[in-house]
Picture 1 (tube, one colour):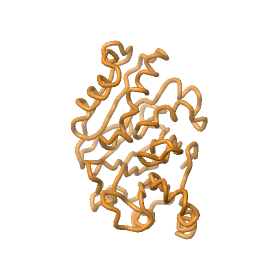
Picture 2 (cartoon, rainbow, N blue to C red):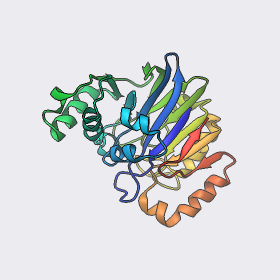
Picture 3 (tube, one colour):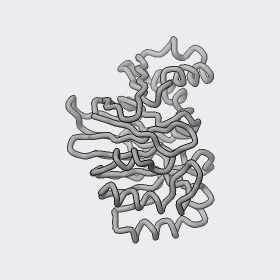
Picture 4 (spheres, helix red, strand yellow):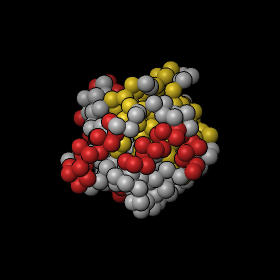
Length: 258
């Protein structure tokens, strides 16, 4: 399993692209790739990300996961799809997320480029999933749980061979998220604040406790409020260094290999 951080920023960070991850692994059908979330600024960052092989950037992912329908998590889809169309992609693209994915995908594409859907050279394969439902994402076994966010948001467990990845989307971990994350090798958690109690969001403090409880070997904290990352970044890094895990505050282009 290899995870490249395309972006690590929150919705309105002017210096860091929206949180988005490019995941590579080997499944039953061979190597496959998934893009986790694709917000306002994430699509451009994907095509510019030198941590991802040029061939993968040109070809695009096998599937896209949308954790929830806030703009910093899915408004980059028109850019991504139009660019892949221009580059001549013909293989289908699965787009998976919360119930309503089909309608939201169509609406955002039609708002951005009203004729794009009719022109696409590749098939779009939207798939809605529900909490607790087992499904496949680019051939990898997956399951989701509702996170503690202001909008319905699905945290994801993705199994890549013998390794498992947890990606929380937005929101503090719920009891269902804690169950979902048990035994994951890599845990990637949103931490808009430093201490617990941020409405609709997680925190660095909670992410550390969550990773310990899950038994994760590796923790990455993303989506930190922009002012906190700038002004208290060293405090956050110190908390992560001292937590007893392989924990980090990654930047764009950072890679986790497990």
